[in-house]
Length: 157
Image (cartoon, rainbow, N blue to C red):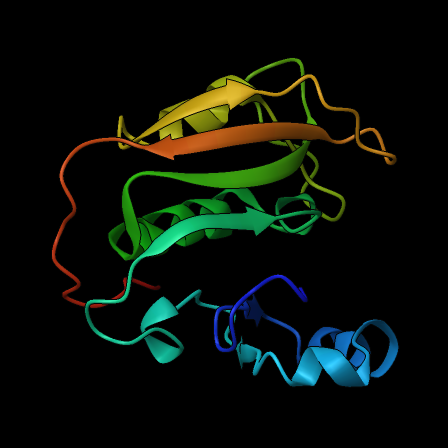
């Protein structure tokens, strides 16, 4: 985080306790000089922490989608899309299911690469990475395609 300009570290989680644990156990005093912007929002409403016209070059969701059912994963991908520049990368991890069914119905959630491709609705290219994750999750690089849509507001529900 020390290489980011102040205000350029953004964090979003559905669970306030997770964010608080990050502040308490992960961030050092010098990190707060970077002015991290964080938001608690289970609906992934990026407009709550991004300013109108502000676009992201990249985003990372490590060990996030392993805790989300398919519907919430879709909501996140739909809601972050307008806030990403064309060609921007969204790097995510999943527990990979080898079939096209998302399972189980409780954490941890497994998703197939084909399911991720289908829910992106041709808005993202989805490329699995060979980089190894210590918890045997699969890294995927999603790259935004097409023209940037207007930021009419996030969808949730």
